[in-house]
Length: 231
Image (cartoon, rainbow, N blue to C red):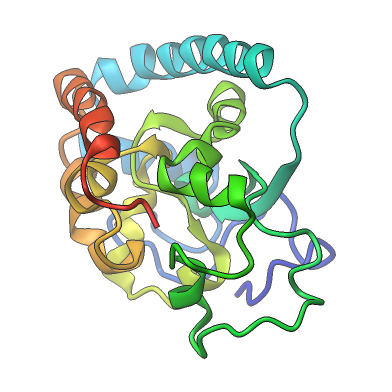
C-alpha cells in the first residue's frame, strides 16, 4: 500500500494497491489483461476506445501550445495523482503558493485540506489566488492529456494518500482516465471535497458517451463563470 508521495518509494508506473478494485479492477496491480477484462465488463464503446483517446491528445496538444505561446515559460508544480487502473502519474499545475510556504510561519487551519481550499489561504500568491478562482492553474494538465495520462473529460485525479483511504466501491472511478474537467466541476464546483462527491464520478464512468462529453465540456465554462469559487 502506498502511504506517501515520496519519489523514492513510488514511481510513475506504480499502481495503488489499496483495494481491491471490485468493478474497476480485479486484484492489486492492474496488468494489461486485467484492464482489458474490466473494459469488456463495462461494455466500452467504440467512441471511448478509438475516438476519445485521439481527440484528447490532438486537442490537448493544440491547446497546450496555445497556452505556452500566450504565457511563456511558467513555474510548474508537480504532484503525484492516481489515474486509470490505479496507476500513479505526475500531474502538472501552475504554482499558486509561495515556494517557501512550508518554511514560513503562517496561521493555517488544523485540517490542511480546509485551508488549502480556502480563497484566503495565506500561502497563496496574489496571482495564484486569481488562477485558483478561475481554475487556470489546471491548464498545464493539457500536457498530461497530450501524454495520455489524462482525458479532457473524466473524474478528477485524486491524491495518492486520499485514494489509500478509499472504500472499495470508490475505486470504480479509476476504470476510466481522469479528466481535466468532469461532472464534479460542472455540478458541484467548490461544494465540498472531491472524494465526498464520488457518486458524480461513478455516474460518468457508467455512461461514457460522446454526447455526455460534449455536454460536460459545454457546461464547464458557465460553471467557471458562475458564483461557485473553484477553491
